[in-house]
Length: 126
Image (cartoon, rainbow, N blue to C red; front, side, top):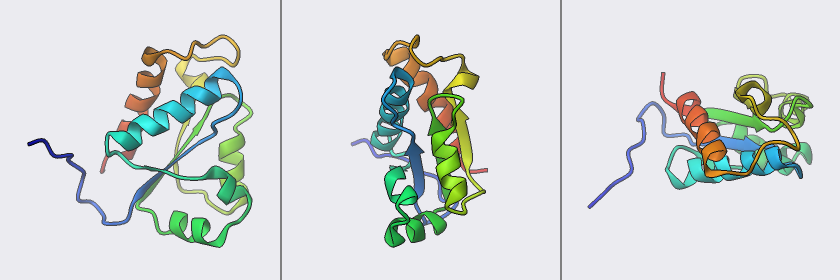
């Protein structure tokens, strides 16, 4: 019997907000976030709910033990959305910093894994 291990640093959830943009790098952020969720590293959450100021999503995000924001390109839409909603304390990945560029990065298992590994490290207890 296998069981997923999670850190015991907090009972509040760890939330993951990918930009999920329309370019290849946006799809990579989305797939990496889903992989992290499947692996039990955090819960994928709705960035549109942050932008729309949906009260339940804002409250859940404010009470999260950790928040990870993943942007696909240097426009940093997801990061800007979170900051405009008042969130400043979150972990952050921008795929450009991992060597990926909009329009030229293949949606490959290798690229998805690279982002997921980085996300896992940022979500780990410290």
